[in-house]
Amino acid sequence: MPSSSKPSLSPVLMVNFIGTLGYSIIIPFLVFLVDKFGGNEFIYGIMGSVYPAFQFFGAPVLGRWSDKYGRRRILFLSQAGTLLAWIIFMVALLVPKTSFLEVDQSVLGSFTLTIPLLILFAARALDGITGGNVSVANAYLSDISTEENRKANFGKMAMSSSMGFILGPAIAGLLGATVFEEIIPVGVAILISAVALIVIWFKLPESKTDLVAPDLAKFKIRKLFATEAKDCYETKEKKSKGVSGVFKIRFISFLVVIYFLTFLGFSFFYVSFPMHALRVLEWNAFELGIFFSVLSGMMILVQGPLLSKLSKTVSDEALVCVGSLLLVFNFLLIGSTNIVLSYGALAFFALGNGLMWPSFLSILSRYAGDEQQGAVQGVANSAGSLASIIGLILGGWLYGNIGNVTFYTAATLLFVIFLLSFRLFGMKKRNSST
Image (cartoon, rainbow, N blue to C red; front, top):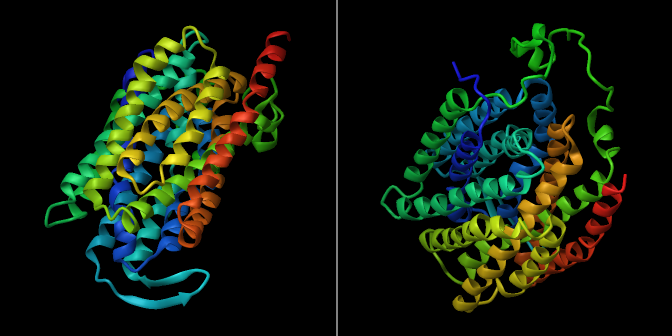
């Protein structure tokens, strides 16, 4: 049985790192798999959107469950879904490439639907519906953070994600270069997901020990899925439940808008750049893996020593403002056919994302409060998922039709966020005066 000791930062950082490592392994070769199995830019965009589409519905539920039943149990459930999804993904690599529908249109382009392609869709869907890892892990981190260390802790969480993103693409690129191609990286992802389950069960103590009265402490799966009658218990204060209750919290609506726009802009990048690397730069999975590994390595330097130093003297609001502007310059340069400029853009990406995102998550956590932390994180995660659905599908279609102009669209969205971020200063002033 897991330890009942006071929660510490290390286990949740480890869980986040392992989860990100498993997820990031897919990045370098998914675009090549879609292309090999008959897809094009549009299909690649849809493939990318499947995960956030199902996460859109799953994340709020998992977030509310984590408020009620505990972070650890829901993290375990989510990670179990990820493990099963990777097993299904492996099946897609082993079945014959059987075609059953060919499409050739001026709007959608030319592509072929095959059995392996459909199995990939199923694997991504399952991973998405149980993909509440991020929102629940953020809620867990907020539980064990104080006002003094909240921003630094979210910086460490972002740094653990970046470490996963360094190793994941590199592992995929190196192992995918063998005669077994994608089979070995996917096998490693299965192993990583299994390790994450073990870490959650044996190393991650529950962060919310006062969830319910003692008679509810014993978890039952029937209650989790609402098939058993709920017991009554008292709360300190009656709160509005569900999505409507979340949006009644002061300033949360505005922060969810920023969350949405950020994910929309980044989705354009994450669907367009792999296609840009495949079609224009003519990279292979190894070269694309190295590119993302370098990016993640630079972000670790920003989210680690640089953010820790700046967090002592610079406000979250200022870091969000500066970071969003730096990201504008990144998106203006990233689509260049010049390799030096493409890699040079990573400096703006690392600085912008490394300063902005942990700071923004710290602001969101601060305004969410303690009672509905999981629900707020779940709703925000769903807003990001909705933005990813739109951005990945639209971004894939746009890149197939207008090419690198898609990156300029992302730059425009980040510039809008830069302008909106000035309101954060007023919010902080009004909140401190009440």
